[in-house]
Image (cartoon, rainbow, N blue to C red; front, side, top):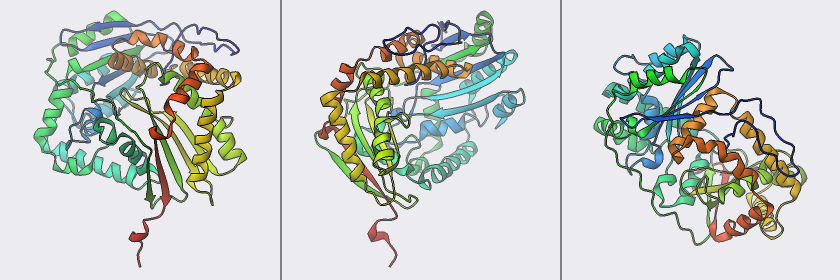
Length: 446
């Protein structure tokens, strides 16, 4: 989870301190009577302001048979509202020198815009208008249903290796539905969905008491709060069903599968291990280990698999950073003439070596430097600050926790990394997915 503590970064043994040119992060928090949580951070160094609205709904909240709804609404929210025509949200922002977008994940949906600082009122009014009165019509629904289906065809079904990114989650999470199914959803669920189900989804989740509004940049907090009250306070709160997290997925033996990908030209593979949720104590050393193993060309696995043995073209390692049960993942594309098993043996042996001998002091120092830099430079923009503050408020209940986050990484020890390597990388906790070019033999034309 790459967020940043602004201001002075405390030094740590053997690592060069990372200097931040950003001011100390000043955070103001408030909650309206209708339940909308508001987070504000003033920074007058650049004459722009960022607005981000985070809704506490992602694909994890979807019921079986209604997958893809969270992502559908990312599209629906730009189709007009009581006072805004279809597509006008974008045009109003762009014509004033700003930009806007939205994204969907397993754990949330967000909408955001950056504007000149004198246009804050416009950004707030636009977000409030669609929160209050989104145009949910049969025409808009049909149009965006087809858009999502085409997006799936172009960005997933017809892209090499991307279908395997969905399959590894299905395989690793098994019957743990919140994270086993994809954010883009099953297209048949969208085909079968009636308009009434779309309206119900909006009424359930797109409410002020299920959202965080974050403002960062060149503005006056008192004036901003007056605008927030003016535009958002009249929107009524709604009853919603709270997400109830199922028991964590249980895995007692290694899971393996091979799939064919007609768009792939070289074999590839995924390895996935179950780990605790993001910000759990063990998650921090696991993230640091992922940097040591796969961050950059000097990392252990890149040096071994790509540079020395030349059996892989590329390798990536990371945690998926979910609010709930998470995965530690290794992904690699093979070099021509090499099989996934060759590289998997190297990865598994490397994990076992770390469990036995740990990592070096220098490796950990380097990882901490990389993490510090990512935190500092990752929040230089008003939008990055607005997003991270909103996410901390939404996920963890207090945006101020952002100021403490970097310390959790910098306090990771070599012993912590060795301990989690021993704890989580056993064969019974491992899922292996091989990706093979072409089509299954039975499907080949005679």
